[in-house]
Length: 269
Image (cartoon, rainbow, N blue to C red; front, side, top):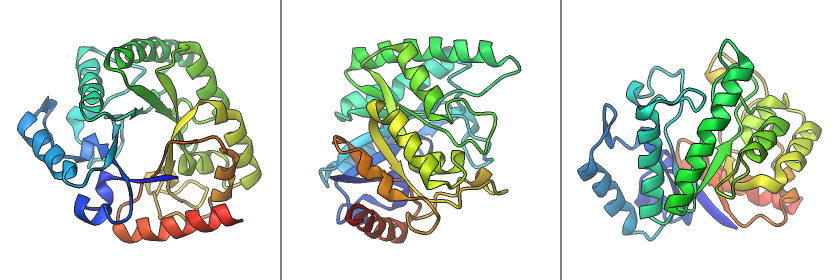
């Protein structure tokens, strides 16, 4: 089992004692000035992590309603222009440079015409999958939380259908168990069905916890330490053939350590 943590969980020196992999979370790395990638800043980040010999995955920019999210890095895969494709290519190129097998990206947002928005998203994902193939990496399309009705691919069936519509070996699924728990309303049986439906497409995991219901903070997507909410992490045992990273998307070293114990206990059940 390869354990990982998002780069916002702590500094590399502290994380290295507890995980083998780090997910470079592009919007929070401070390597952009507006929408311009500052190569010197990126090189410093890569120099810092290279000391500790981490395996690496990459999380590309996405759409966020949070006022703290960099406005110049907003990216909706249902509505992409040259700027958005350039941002995605920079993340894909970075993944190739550091030999990261997976680039995480988010599905698009539902516009006034759902069908047209969906068709546009699939078309854009086709282009991105072709680009990923050129760079020798794989995209992990992440399931979003159903507590925000503006998201595509909250349900496992729609995410699976989207991946199958693109039909590329370079577009698979990042299974976010916290988002799935919100979509399933905290029901462990529905969560199990979610995993079973998506299982064949999963190449990457995001681990965090929540209460399984909408809240005013982030639509309930609070990214608590695994074990602090109601997510049934034992459903991960269904992924018996999974060999990718178990990436903790938490905000502190303390949450990471708590989450590691929760995951260990879940696999003992």
